Amino acid sequence: MRRAADKVNTETDLDELKARLTAYMDQKGLRSTAQRRLVTETFFEAPGHLSIEELLEVVRKQDPKVGYATVYRTLKLLTDSGLAQERHFGDGVSRYEVAHLDEHHDHLICVRCGRIEEFENDEVEAMQDRIAAAHGFVLERHRHELYGVCHSCHRDRG
Amino acid sequence: MRRAADKVNTETDLDELKARLTAYMDQKGLRSTAQRRLVTETFFEAPGHLSIEELLEVVRKQDPKVGYATVYRTLKLLTDSGLAQERHFGDGVSRYEVAHLDEHHDHLICVRCGRIEEFENDEVEAMQDRIAAAHGFVLERHRHELYGVCHSCHRDRG
DNA sequence: ATAATTGCAAAGGATTTGCACGAGT
DNA sequence: ACTCGTGCAAATCCTTTGCAATTAT
Image 1: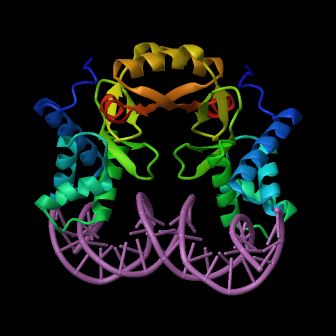
Image 2: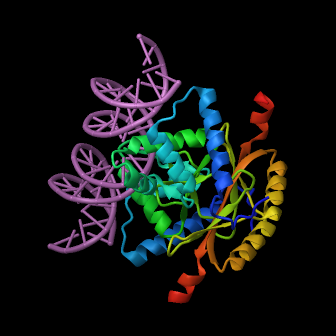
Image 3: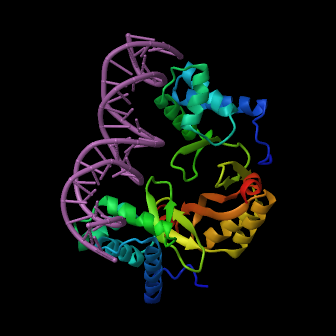
């Protein structure tokens, strides 16, 4: 089990991600195009929690002709294949992060500067299962976000 | 401290809510109109987690001429005054619930039928404070949602 | 009277979709 | 060849806003 603090995807992770994507696309009869390769690799290598707009900006440095629709469609493909996860932090835009292959984590969001940190807590996870069970629910997933003021913002202006 | 299971607002709650709203409006120099009274009372008496559309539907049974904008604006007023809270459960619409005056709770959402239940767990709350502190955050609020299959959906189709 | 509120319709922002053209298999 | 993918623009969905008419104070 990796720790949530390991933010950067290693080269091995990247290979693993690409392999999974290829497998998924083969199985569905989908095609490997230059745009898809560009978008997916950019996404896999980028830091987490990007919006479509942010991702497109990076992508266009390589190929300025790529359109919004392609990025939306490619992220949908990644989400469907389980390699990306869509997140909403309340600012109206969808953000995506690479699905970590062997861990689960949640988020701390600074309400002043927007910085996003990750955390992971097995006790909370265990408690969630118990809560769900007590309500007769079979848990599939959850969302757990803590909003507050991060250390540097707190230092800077009380 | 009331329990999250007490879903229906009592008559006393209703009076308290109205009193707070009146106080807020007086202080801001806002006016009491027939539409506002209708929207706010409908909202206060309705079960939690309504979308604007759902609320408007109920409101229009009393007065079919009320428009979307009025409901949006009134809910904004309620949110600003602290009497309503806006929620997003991932289906693209904003939902609102009456701000409970003396409790905090989170949500369990059935991914099949959309049913929403509430839960409350002090241990989890305490843990959140510790997690935030460990990351140097001062916590303001959080979001904790459990998505799964509820008992009746599970019974009905596995 | 004065200023706030309403309802409509138009504008906004994010995301999706239709379609003709282009590219992968 | 055949089908899927792309890029553009138009369409859609939810929400906000401008404005003239209406209403509360």
